[in-house]
Image (tube, rainbow, N blue to C red; front, side):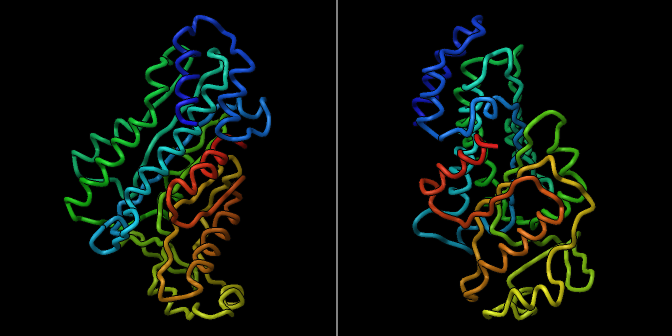
Length: 303
């Protein structure tokens, strides 16, 4: 499937003085990967943002996984996102190409090495600048630099937490939403949020959630949802209308000490995104990348 996309990109873009795409080839390239909802919808310009979480969730010593380390799963998820991006670009006439993909962090890393890698994870493709090589290689560029970022963060051992709530409050509209585009934000997270400089509480609503917080609220039995509703438990809504944004949350990894943790985390996230009027959302548990590849690409390709 990935080979088909890359081959099609080469054929399309290496001769891109032509402004037409062979319809049969175009359908084969996309349908071989994901069943697109319609030709017109696939032509929509994409603006993809990837929010990477460099908290201690990626620490292989604290949270080991014999099957596949969590940070390595992230790298493969990113490749799936970019493969979906490639499929969309390959499905367009060259004159229509105007697509963007960027990675972000909150809090921003203080490491010069990490910032150097992150600079390479901001790519724009327009009809004036698009090349076959750049489009064919964008998934590898992102995967290579994402892996370098994670490895550097693990080597540094300075896990600064996750300020996802602050990112939504201060930056999501500015960084992730462009007029006239389909805006997609992909969040790589274990589902928990905590940053020492962004710890707010308004009644039972907070800017953070941790396993300890969930235990304190006694959301550890089959009555968890009624408790959340009656006690108004959740994230503090951000004053933003995000109807122009689709959000894909990847990597939810609930504490296994609580049988209901998965449901509670999904409720925290789902209700919060709903309150911010997000256009489309999906919240997925951590899984082997091969199991999620199709779902991730489908989210990127199909509005």
